[in-house]
Length: 294
Image 1 (cartoon, rainbow, N blue to C red):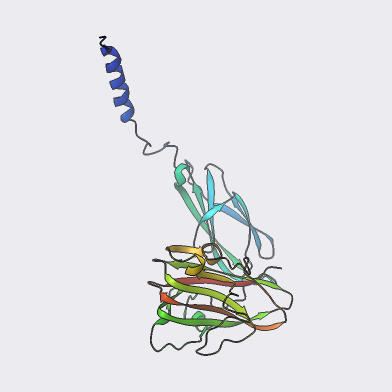
Image 2 (tube, rainbow, N blue to C red; image 1 turned 180 degrees about the horizontal axis):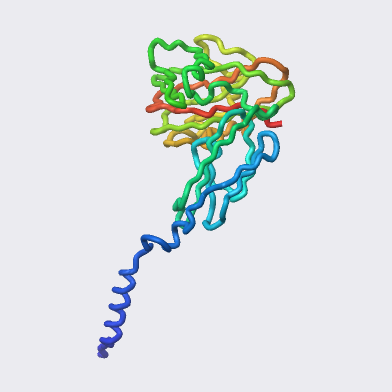
């Protein structure tokens, strides 16, 4: 029988190689680690290109990518030269972040943009949709007084939260003025810390005015919602944070793009119909919008 004899010199060399490689750190702290941008200048210029439209231009390109917050409180990837459309009047806090390898933020810069007036077609028709104060809250009406306290809207700093249990429900609504032949789309920022169970949270628009103590489905049925968190349709069971309802919500197979087309000029009603068996910590909403798209 042959016995295999290993070369001791080979074993020693292999051991040293393994020991040396295990001492090499994955990253190097301090300057020059290849992850953090070496220039922390995230400044940018703002140029008004036309009414309600602006160009954001990063001051330097010494980083991998840019992220922008265009006044909604959340940074998202965008180009170094970013053309944006701000259809609503108001003052916006615009932020820019420069990003290195591994997604590390190397610097942040902010500027304010003041928009003097709404875009005539795409301006937001919702009033008080950010719930910043009592004046905003007063723009909304609740269809159910709800003395049992089981289907409640509560008002926070910059948001509204709906909770429900025992299959109770409520409708929050306001009037909007629409123009015949115009197509409109609804959206909002929504969050849920826990997700919900056996619940619905849906946006309807119709010419019929909501009635006290009655459910609301616009001018259609309970399948005519424009946007919705609906556990039976596959959304809302898991937690979600500061996401657009058009993204994390369910798609209505009858109207996947969530359009409302005005058949006459006049007053319509924008309503959020919600309820359920167990909404846990509830669904929080802010930045509600309803705007023309053509």
